[in-house]
Structure formats: C-alpha cells, structure tokens
Image (cartoon, rainbow, N blue to C red):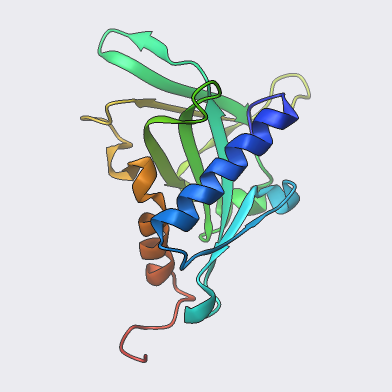
Length: 171
C-alpha cells in the first residue's frame, strides 16, 4: 500500500476485506497476507471451486484538484512482473479517509495487466501510476469504478467469469 504508516495500512486492508465480505453476503473467502507475492488480499469463493484472485491495494488520502474536478492520483512502487502479468490479479485503487475510516467515492478495480509500470530512474524500482476522475465520468477507468458497498458483488462476478471458475451449466 502507498501509506507508510503500518497501522493505516492494516486499517485499509481490513476495510477492503470487510467490504468484500459484506458486499458478497459472506460468500467470498478473504485472506489477508503480508504483501506476499505482491498481494495484500487473496479472494475466493470456496463453495464454487478453485478460482482465486490476488488483490493489491493502493490508496491515497488526498485528492488532486484539476480543471475538471477532483482526481485520484496514485503513484507507487510496481509489484513484481509476475503480478503485473497475472490474469487473476487486480489492483484496488481508491481515496481512503483515515479520519472517517472509509473510502470516499468509487473504488477502481483494475486488472493488473492494464496498469503499466514505468522503469525506475537511476537504479530505483519500477513505478506504477494511476490517475482517474473521482466522479468516474468520461474517462478511461470509468468501466472499473465500483461503489464501495458493491465491491463484494463485483468480485463475485469477476470470480464467476474467471477461466478457473466452474461453469454455471455444470452446476
């Protein structure tokens, strides 16, 4: 996560896990990990088979003001190439208010393969950069915007569409 404060990182990770669990009506199994394999959470539907999604959470506590409104701007160290190419890995980008202990505005769930990394300068590690209008209108990431309370249902859909998920006709 982009926060340097471990207590804030744990709070954000817990809130995403809570949103996933409550929004899926407790159908998702959410496991917190200590950024192993570049993931913060691992999400699955245990009753429906082996489909699993790895989640990397990147947040900001401030918005950038622009000519067309407020922008979510996140820059962070890029995860390993394996995560960035994994079709079962997604980023969760959002504006998280530490004082309110919740996400403000939409959360963007973006497949890892769509977020490019730029090489680091002078020996520094590669970086990712994400920039989206908070109102999610008329911009490239609007299809990935999810209301926080709908995050669990969105992940259920992602997992049911996963190539490793069992087909609905077989059930």
